[in-house]
Length: 340
Image (cartoon, rainbow, N blue to C red):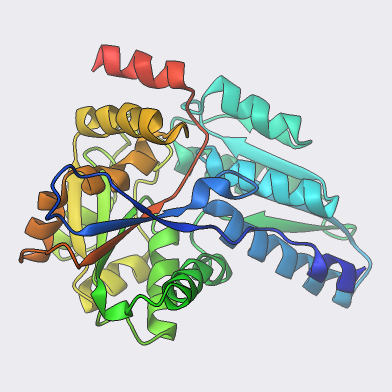
């Protein structure tokens, strides 16, 4: 069973595609890494799939306990956990906050997971999971695999495979890595960002390729932390990009950002909503605001240039991580845009 588990794929290799987002012919080239093609429809499948599979293998090697996976999430992490558990034939319980869309709760349930909806934001949902749900299971009989949505080194290691694939894709296309002038990613609690930094460090690129971390105002824990030069915890999430949904970033995120001079960008809800609709029409992929935060810079390369502090030319490359996510429908996007 251990060997069989190890052989079951839990995430996909995704394409890195050049996209023509800017209308300026002299703008830098934009390459998009399409994480929406993951089994759980977001990058979360990489890290969470890696974490669950590795913990299952460890548990089965050490004993005969039954296994139950428990996840807290703003939506996408829980869905990734549920899809992974479906692949591995494991029971899964996901706790999500009240801000999670009804259709997302249904998606998680449809792949076989139990869903509990409680709390104003992810941190409250996570507290309920750890204290009220996991705390009541019989640990003599059941091994509880707790899946944090972003704060675990094994998750970061899984996410770091994004960088491995980027390097491989560029090599296959005979594109010199030195042409890459930045990697753009959305940031919530820091799991994706930590994975990117882990991967860049492994390839000795962390001090050569700057990362531009994009948040929406109201989820901007990293931006505020960097400005104040200390860890900042938000009182609550006030942005419509609720799937970014963490009121803090990990200590490692803060330390990576300071050490490697990560560029921090904040956008308004109105900006990311317009980009969500624009890119959904462009790509035919429903693009939730959390994902659109990074893609926004593809349409407006001048924001990237300002963040980097220098001009870019048409031979330079900016890579955008389209992190994916399925917490919104197109109707949701239109409704939010009407209200903004």
